[in-house]
Amino acid sequence: MKNNISSPWLDDQLVSVITPAYNAERFLQETIQSVLSQTYDQWEMIIVDDGSTDSTYSLAESWSGKDSRIRVIKCLENGGQARAWNIAIAAAKGRYLAFLDADDLWEENKLEEQLAFMEENNYGFTYTMYDWIDENSGSAGKIIDVPESQSYKDMLKNTAIGALTVVIDRSLVDVAEIPEVHLNDSMMWLQIAREGVTAYGYDKVLAHYRIVTNSFSRNKKRSAVRLWNLYRDQLKIPFFRRAYYFTCYAFNSIKRYYLK
Image (cartoon, helix red, strand yellow):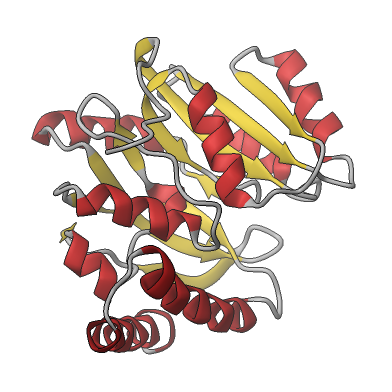
């Protein structure tokens, strides 16, 4: 891979938790606490304040003052999640990368169980099941199952990987800078898988994805358009093959989010 932004790491046991944050004051404290509660304690949390106009930065800084494992990087202008990921990954000291948005949560045993799963099987790229929570952190009544594995072609047909569940072992997987595009998570997984890396699923709910009222349907429609553009502009997939993959994506999304 070109433009590897994540090597060498400095700590062989450390998990670097990548958390972009934009106007996230409402939920950020709970997200931080879910990391602080991890039974695996060798982690650093890199919060990139992406030009917030609320108290996100001061809140993150206050937590950094309480626990040195929390690092805060401030961007003066909002540059989008892809840029925030690139900045955080370039600063990461850990062998492992994990991803957690500023409104999502982890189970306290998330890192411990997932790292054990990776070590036992020598996997470099893994993801888990997750469920939905509402704005009050209560159950939203939906569990997202995951396939046993995902190759590059699988990912093109089915965006089954929740970013909040991913852990990557940089001793086994190169992580390259991603273009500053929407759907930065899909772009990163596809870049990695295109190099021949298979991602493996762990069939247990270890993370909680927050659904904000009235935003989900709108976001899914927007994501569909952005995925088509990603296939066309970034991956340069020819039209008819692109249409096939996109049709598979649409079917799998309907099945995952609306039929279960």
